Image 1 (cartoon, rainbow, N blue to C red):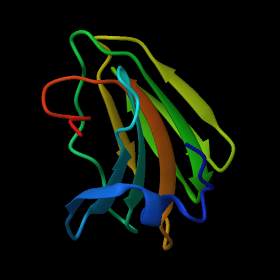
Image 2: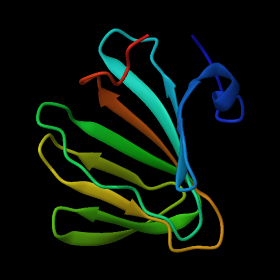
Image 3: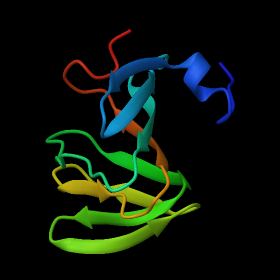
Length: 114
């Protein structure tokens, strides 16, 4: 399968849409999920960790901060963050525009079910 960032929303499945963010998954692989999150201005994700799943975040648009355990790091377009299993992570959009990130992670629970 091939898609582009511009076409991601059409190719992927909208799995969650709230006033905080919109999340789209491409669950076509057997062990990995490619997901796009559009985090709206002034919002933050709930934050979580994965017991048995690693994750990669690629920031596509906007700027904000990311919490990794107790550390806060600035993030912006072009940044890549590697998240090992069991590391707490949370994203904050402190800007006036959307913060868009692509994540790739190992399937867990019901995430990535086709």
